[in-house]
Image (cartoon, rainbow, N blue to C red; front, side, top):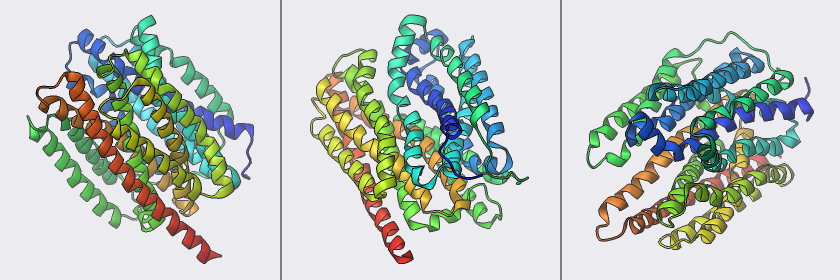
Length: 468
């Protein structure tokens, strides 16, 4: 089959993207319901966080499986399985009589989303015309990038009108629509094969993510109980070492680590991880800052960040078009510089940010985000051979989920330290101080990402000149 930009390709991207969108929307929408859930199910803050941690953990474990699943099963079968699992997870949450069933529903949704997100990008990479890949990768990024900002607004509106169960209930028809759309549009381009699963590799990587993510989820209590962070973190690191050793000796590893021999790919992936840390970190800081420092409601906090997220998401396919016409370096470097300026402004003004300043600076930050994220992933995967794309795509989606789990934990810990140590200040002032420290940390991450992207696009350009 030839690469054509037709309605089936567009609808298959939208179908898989909608499923991923719903998973991320719930993640941010339920954050504002935590106080309600804690009271209704009689659980503490550490326990209620498993609504998010459980989802991210399972989704992270599913991502490295994406290359194996692509080779073993048809795209339509994978999407059908993901849709049914996601709907089942939503039903579990809507009808949950206890907290265990509520978390179980989120875990099942994590499996579904973990299948759908890599599938969307695999479809684009395999089926899109070469001169439209940047645009379509941007379109895929748009579907999922706007979800974190819509989540708090959606959650606030639904909870006020229908209660927390409505967050899950109203997504069921959207997932059903996506499933029907995917059934009629998803096509199979590559042949499937009876590839064997690297079971030991999966076990090692699962222990890695469980250990590291649980460790980071306990990071805020490291001074009171350091073992809660150190023990799972060390287990995770040891499992990662075992995974790397095992994969280097295995002829059919879960993830093809030879892609890291490509310097440009490795630099792009490292930068993507740091920028994703920054994105998830800032999405935690700003709603809390607006509520705790500026004394506004959760709904107001959601509405303040919504314009920036919408603009950044809409820019993603437009910057992808620029990528198709002008290459990678210009839109990527422009985007990361805009982010650096925005984060510097957040840091400088961090102690006394007004609602208007947050709104404007966040729009600037998301303009940069929309220009960087999709193009960085697209350009990195373009550096690989066609038979390595599924592995590279799996790594990017794994990094995305992992950064989501780690980023929020690091930022919340920095803010918690400031809230607990600055005696003599009001709680609002302590929170503002913690936010300012977090902005500085995220600024450092962005500086490193800028260096990596500058070097990565230069390495790519020099190699392209050699080929010519």
